[in-house]
Length: 97
Image 1 (cartoon, rainbow, N blue to C red):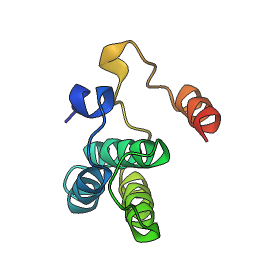
Image 2 (cartoon, helix red, strand yellow; image 1 turned 90 degrees about the vertical axis):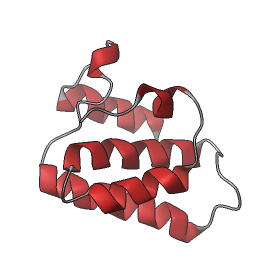
Image 3 (cartoon, helix red, strand yellow; image 1 turned 135 degrees about the vertical axis):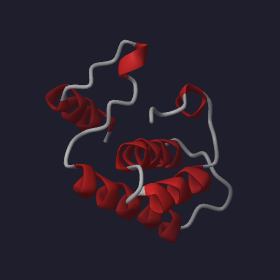
Image 4 (tube, helix red, strand yellow; image 1 turned 180 degrees about the vertical axis):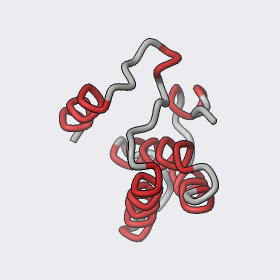
């Protein structure tokens, strides 16, 4: 299951993405990691109404839980010309943070 291009192209509610990551961490870990990373992305960019620390923690912990199940990086974005190699993604995440 690939990440929806709309969720990465335009701002969307990070809480919805974080809940999707939490709820699908065991059934669809690849999707859950993508949703969780997008939630963290939008939170870091100021999207969301009255964001709290618990919102960030839920997005983070759900993403980590799904990533541990998957044990790899998501392929989200590869269909849009982005690399799905772990090294390239790790470097881009480091630049992001």
